[in-house]
Length: 411
Image (tube, rainbow, N blue to C red; front, side):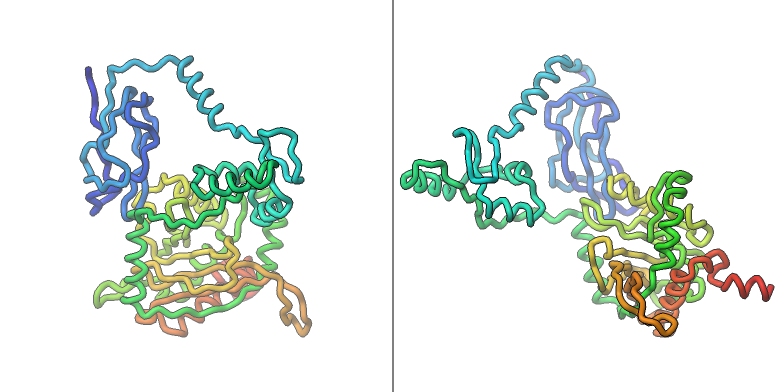
């Protein structure tokens, strides 16, 4: 018998251990070469572990365990023969059969056989209000407790008809906090205790950007293969505004201030593993289309746990968009050691005064949280004013924030 060891890889410098978040295979399974077999999680990033060869796997490091980088996660017996496809197929078919629901669901209060499950009109209405299908609800019922048994037996004694079962049960569960979540918690507490964080607000008329998106969205998708979103406009506008207010694009290192002549902007992305912030490098040198393409690429990598530690390190400023979840207003928390973070929010139509008239316009509140040790009120307010100016007049982004007509006349 010949076998190979699969070692724990290093996610990046300074990381000495990772946690086995989950195994995608079971002990004794046959795995193929390059098949993803496990997900690893560190305090900064997640990555997948792949099989270096085909064979029978023997798992050594267990789920939830902290394992040192370089240690053996599992072994693979490369001399083992692959199982017959027919047996595998039949096993899969049997698994599918077992997973299929054996009960038919009706919602009008009637039944046609003893195998059907009755759902009352009230229960049906609750499911519809919660946006849950009947099949999805039943799939979540993994066990029957004594409460359900007592209810059914007592109902059966008093009524020969099939009872309607109430599966509600009060429960509390405990799950171990992931390494990524633990690290995020520590960073948030550090920000609160170690910075002088303040937040300033403004609002932006989104009509100009929304009109541009509506006009060019189909052409943009055809040419670049991605949708034209709001984030690229804000990322590009923030990059320009940071050049006008460089203190927002700086950070404190001990008793020194570090200033950057470039803008590497982190974009907060919500993933199944928690919040991740991939960094878009050199936004100041990119076009809006290049910015949009890079944002889409990095967000996809983050959501699929394919992003590296290097791709989330070294940002000079961060943008987060709570508007995708419906947030109207919030105070985003700093991403240390950065001095500023921009919060975008939900777009709502509101009446505003425009040229002496009250008009309905799509408006967005924006927030800038900043470290007051480094950024004064003048810079924080000025940054948002410049951002507002660029978003409401997006053609100015072509001239690095200058008025196109003034540039035409004065140069």
